Length: 279
Image (cartoon, rainbow, N blue to C red; front, side, top):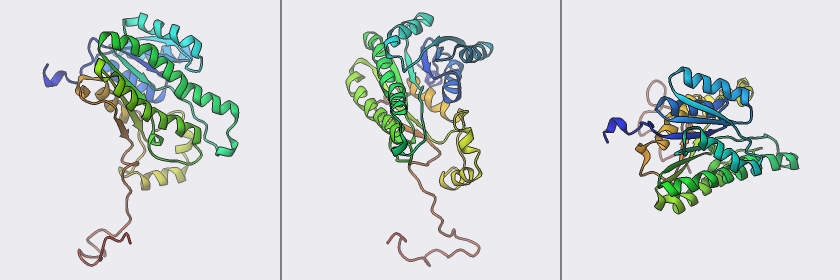
């Protein structure tokens, strides 16, 4: 295999949940552009048709499967329907998820059940179904979509954060269990990405200002920013990577811009500020 082929997904079949919009759509399009045959799954057939038609128009291969992760009883049949499209699934991208931003005291039983059902329980059942075939074939890539909250706390996201934190632990455990079968499991953790679901929040001027200040790269992300990492984790380029959480967040979770004076102009010259300023 040449280095040029490391990121090729030719001959591979991918299943992407939540593929009708936002990150899921971008990832599905990115995998198809690198040669994968992509099964796009979501709850709404009309939305899926727009995605698959776009992929086919660009020269890729895609089919749609209606799938509701909250309907656990229907997932085994949905998994079989997905594998009937292009053959056994080599790449599973667990992207579908729901969220309700609200204080912990306001979380209703309905919201609690819905978030757990989609983000964790349904994801687990689908992974269970698809991974059986991967183990039998001794080949597979499982990519779970976490978030910043996989390892970083944010207020008013208690239940969502619990599910995304669980995905980090699930990924490590599955990596330990399935690695001997040549099945790789990793968690892809996007940061603040502009999608149809987050546009309303990030259109607020004070949120935009906060994001520019707090994110080291100085901007919020777009779905295309996450595609490269997804292709990497799906391809042979990551064949020695498993059990990892890869943050694609502009540095938010690992770095803090520190507003001390820079050298030059009226800033203090080197050596004038004593100590590290932390104590």
